[in-house]
Length: 346
Image (cartoon, rainbow, N blue to C red; front, side, top):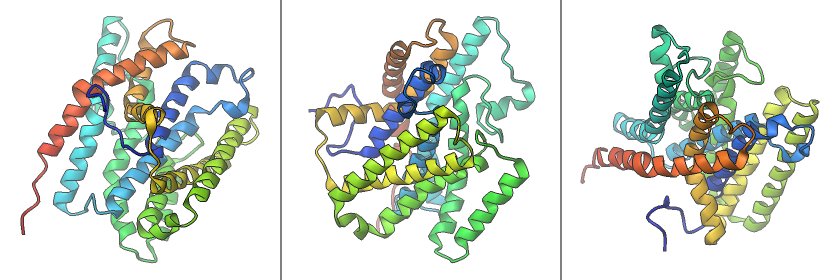
């Protein structure tokens, strides 16, 4: 029997949800311990924060791509209204709450806001091209998420057209944006990270359009892709730690990792494995991953003494994530769905 105090989770294993929780936890680890003890922690176990963030982008690309390819989201006006209201309800309430708290705490402590009147709107609505967050540093990723959500319908309309020129057109557009605005390994623009979202979209297209692939040798392929993903994640972390690999090839290797993780998710989903208590606990962590990520950035910035305290920060952030999910995020999602236009009866 599920507790009403916890987010609802599937009865079967949802690996993508578990991955969200694990990599959100990995970000907290990196910001408290991992980035500061690279000389003592085994490199292959110390997942870099940027790898976790890029995997988040890939998971988002998969969710959005699957929604459009499967018909849950549509590209007509009514469909876009539903899509945008759901995305806004999922992201903006907590984003604004934590941002408001950051502003209040900054003012209470007499610190400068580091934002001018001219860029206040851009900061509040995540409209900067290069997403340096003024109030909570980790929120630069939320800016890219929101911007991706805005351009995703147009990207999906092109991809669903199934025209031969679609992929070359997208590639040329991405290359033009990168050349025009510049890029490096830590690029914080939507153009500089579009390939990570597209890796997730590519797997979503495969899952929806080629379902037969996931009906054959399912268990063996789930194990194979999962093992390959673990090995690649260890290699990425190892090479980042010893400083010999982290350039454009590292980003591309992360995209391959995204593909492997999502393929493993698709095979596992087809197996419909019972979650059990450990699986459900991991999926609850995944359901609260957005809150864990958001709150840890706030507490790490404004609560002295949490630097280097992984367990304390993780526990405080999880408690905050549960409270905000229960009191704010879940009601906002339910309200957005109640306000959606009802389908017309034929």
